[in-house]
Amino acid sequence: MPPQRFAMPSEVPGLAARRIAADILDGVLHKRRTLDDQLDGAGAHPGLKTLPDRDRALMRRLVATILRRLGTLGHVLSRLLDRGIPTDAPRAQSALLIGAAQILWMDVPDHAAVDLSVRLVQSDRRAAKYAGLVNAVLRRCAREGQPLIDEVKSQTLDIPEWLLARWIAHYGEITARAMAVALSHEPSLDITVKSDPAQWATRLHGETLPTGTVRTLLQGSVKMLPGFAEGQWWVQDAAAALPARLFGDVAGKTIADLCAAPGGKTAQLILAGADVTAVDRSPGRMARLRENLARLALEAETVVADAAEWQGGNNSGGFDGILVDAPCASTGTIRRHPDVAWLRQEADIGALMAVQKRLLQRATALLRPGGTLVYCTCSLEPEEGEQAISTLLANESGMRRAPIDAGEVAGLSEILTPDGDLRTLPCHLPHDDPRLGGLDGFYAARLIKS
Ligand SMILES: C[S@@+](CC[C@H](N)C(=O)[O-])C[C@H]1O[C@@H](n2cnc3c(N)ncnc32)[C@H](O)[C@@H]1O
Image (cartoon, rainbow, N blue to C red; front, side):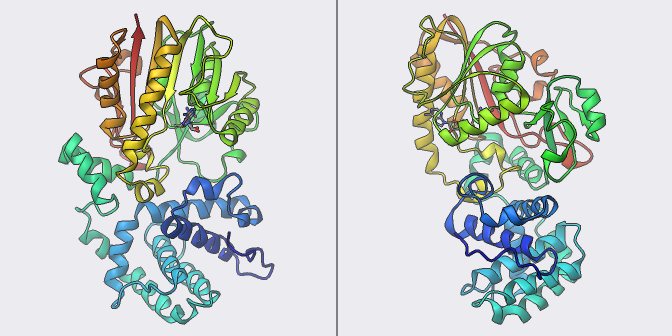
């Protein structure tokens, strides 16, 4: 945990936000800590509490921008630094990244970006000797940065090589590169509303997507937006809002959501009239689910358990529906969680596949005959999607695929596979303004138990 040195009353405005950004960036790049872990819950950076909402939002955007463009930033800085990025003072490295990201992609005056980064290194014992270097490099970045970005525009430096190679192998070169480009843009804020999307699109200065999601470019704390405190909507990527709809009419049906927290899909199912049992292994995440449902004035039974072992509680005859939104490599969420690209390792996929297989087996057992299983992951990796389902179908003769029709997904046939599964990609739903286009990468399949 960083020392308590953030709320200094006489500090230059904006410096605390940059210092916390630097700590969090160090956490991701050098301690392999996720952004979620450092931004929320028990492990959150203690300085966050001292930041006004506006600075907190700016800090989050700054860190996300750096992680989203890390490969390109590395290229730009290496071209501007004769002897490479200093390795003996991590704060000098983060100050350079923070300064350059603001200059190149954010609406911060260049002189302020340079000044704050210089102050950042000056206040660090090991990095202070690099104040002159940081000043000179960032001034050059303001003058020469854009052409240096253009130099590598056709390359895909912001996606780790191993991951890009997988995407090329599965989706082909053109699609994989389009995915990488889509991931380099700051994403919109996607919202699922309880009712009347058109009205909420107007109130939130956004637009309604064909699937009913409200998409807006508003920034800052979502808690301050109209309708949040009143529980009229929740944040949910447009692609993440699709799997729960694949059950069709769920009014009065029993549905077990086996990996439920923080509850976006649980909320959709309750709102559609289902009697939902929400299961999640993590007590902390389940507490968030309960908090979210309370704000939305929605009710579900909640169970903290390993769903791969769970016996179904009081439901002895089997559930009408089971949703498995399995833990996965999460490579489909890199737009919104850019740390995933740098923290995830290819070796993780095998271990996650084993968990997915156990969850699918249990889900099959918990379903009543004729019941519907929807399996989904926010992963772009076929092992966690298409292959997981073909393995299940090969081993469980009592399960068959119920192909999804384009009419169920607002006519978007491009997001369906030839087998009738859902497969959204970051480059789907293109828009003239790239920030308003794109979807998280999701896979979903619908199966029926005979
Ligand atoms: C992708 S997230 C679920 C997101 C959620 N469905 C939503 O829409 O908000 C995966 C969840 O699975 C939970 N999880 C992982 N392994 C589990 C297991 N064996 N049993 C139950 N939950 C598990 C994690 O704690 C995490 O909350």
